[in-house]
Image (cartoon, rainbow, N blue to C red):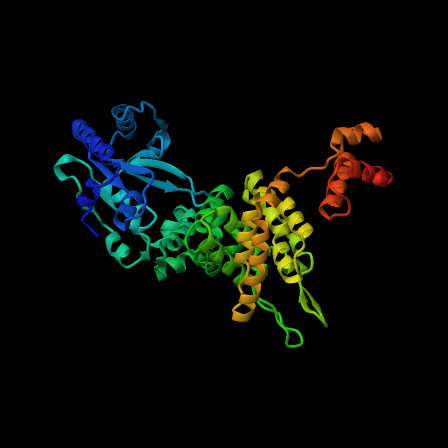
Amino acid sequence: MTNIKEILQNNENISILKKAGALGDKLSISTYLVGGYVRDLLLGRDTKDIDIMVHKDSLSYAKKLSKELNINKTVEFEKFLTARIPNKDFEIEIANAREESYNKDSRNPETVKETTINNDLSRRDFTINSLAVSLNKNNFGELIDSFSGITHLNNSLIKTPLHPNETFQDDPLRMIRAIRFATQLQFKIDPETLKAIKSNSDRIKLVSTERITSELIKILESDKPSIGFYLIDECKLTDYVFPELNPMKGVEIIDNRGHKDVFIHTLEVVDNAAKLTKDMKIRFAALVHDIAKPTTKRFDKIKGWTFHGHDEIGRRMLHKTAKRMKLSNDLKEYLMLLTKLHLRPIALAKKGISDSAIRRVMYEAGEHIDDLMILCRADITTKNPKKIKKYLTNFERVETLMKDVIMRDEMKAFKSPVDGNKIMETLNLKEGKKVGMIKEDIENAILDEVIPNTYEDAYQYMMKIKDKY
């Protein structure tokens, strides 16, 4: 595992790394490959951005390396002694060996100054990221491992180079990063490091929403996302990073009747989705699909526990969640749509299937119908083999009908035969909400097979319902 020189020689970016080392030699600057790139090389994982550390003159070095690589562009962060060289598929970051001092009320460093290589490695987040490899010709491939990073890689352990309290007080984002790495790599967090995350959990409030959301998305992109969300809960970070999960926990029992622990069920659905697709959006939809179950939970003496309307109320709740997390409008609308529709295909499978009911779901889901079906399949978490067989048999019948090419083409092309312009012209209306409502009413009548899908029938139906609006 530690034959890094041989691994480097076979790396797809070896020409860049050799040019970086040759430039260091020319300028008499010690040059190192550091951090996550080294870690991933040793683990045999795909590597992306290249981090290079030099012992002096980082900004000048970056400009010259950019020229050597025929990129001729750098983005400088003079205060932090770093520069970025943009590249087509990844970025190259050049940084001075540096140390920082922090104000306890901020995760941004107050001062940054040059230091030794070992001091720089000590201020990094985890020992597995505190590895450096020389790129200079005379000692190319020589590994610097001052904090037992190789041992911790071999032992699948996340541990901080310094005392974890110091590491997390300097930069609280590292707490959620520890959980993210533990999830991505399926490593354990060192007990002392885990204890420090719990005791410093409230400092996560200093971290921007965007950075937290970015880490949560990386957790969702992992092979088994539940690892991260269980750790977030164990470390008392849930209230700060995803408070919607807290009310889901626990089971209430009345008259000897309980219900699923929604927290556990949700994470099972997320893991099921992760097995079915690499699409982060679907996994995110799995995380939020039952977001309103705690709000809608009721006990009925005859039916037992019910969660009526949790699909629609969940859709509305996601407005607030998306705003807090600063999600894009596209992602927000996607999560709202799948949350609203997540019960529909399963309900079809239970009750029996009609073409009109399937058309309606396909119409409402639009281009996301396949994603919806993946989410619904992931939502089957019962441990009862008979129930699983029954659900899947019915579900597969629904899926088969939804794959009908003709029906799909119909739904893609479907729209009211009477368009908005005709509605305005005939009913003497101005553009606005009423026109949309009338058009939707006509479309619903066609989808429900109340009227045939023809212009004449749609026009007559419009004249019949116009007084309602």
